[in-house]
Image 1 (cartoon, one colour):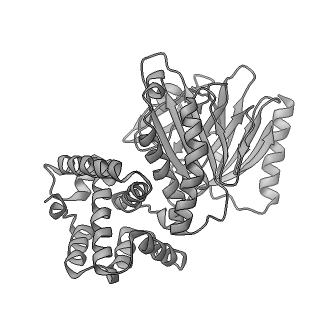
Image 2 (image 1 turned 30 degrees about the vertical axis):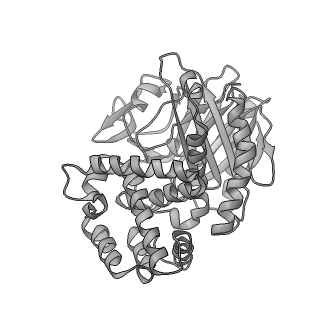
Length: 421
């Protein structure tokens, strides 16, 4: 315990000495002990009456995060989870036991994605907490992490032993804890769960370098080597499935339950990888914050994945996507309302829309959607806000007049019925 406390203090000192201003008044200390128990301690600079979480997609913390003492409780009210004392008094520190198993969250990444060998991938964004309430001005969080001496920590692409300290921003990052040795090649630094089928490992080894080369040819080489995590955990309640995502410099995917790996489809998995890798190559232009505008980066990622996949498979995906889009829009006057209820429309409607745009680009100019995205990213790098509005502005000069009108109508009024004809 003394060694962990010392590491915690040193990590905080390193953050302060680096001259980085902390936008948040709460520090977060994560800990794993030799018995595989995980906990988190929040410490506020000043007394607070509650700690609010930056991300509350549901109320699962109220069941899975248990305060060390009965003096505290995790509550959920009006779409917000928070911690407070049961007597309403102010406090500066609180510790909670965590449930380190995989749980799917709506529109968010799981806090824990276990590996079958006992390793763990955690999503730091799940632990973002603020004094009283979170607002747009709170963009930086200070973390420390302590683990048993025989385990390593990989955070921000660097390896640590026993203790690590860092600052997080935006949506956070995935952090690895365990004993596995990363495999480094010219394209990825990766940790692949040994319980995943050999077919998947072979696909990663054979297809991902090819995928990276294809994207680089279209959108330019990345200035960094991304980290790839592929994990698996068993379940005891019959649940199974998979989830993946991308955060800056990282691609990660998790399978849970034996049926999930027994039913692996190599083409579906390749599409899954291609979509996530596409987000890496979208660069800064993918950082679109308005939820209703997600059709831009998700639709383009789906289209780019289709360009990397077998043509017949992409054709089948388009047919399915158009059907799902049509079904999802029924009963709604505009796309924004429908997608607010069903975020999967950003993928289905998005890829159909991007395919139509690309066809118009090819017929009207010598450009493709890859060319337009490079121009869009250049405009973002020059100061434009990554949004649907700026994406449409980039598209406008290259589209036919009829397509321009349709895209403008969709972007401003959410009308997409023409796409369903």
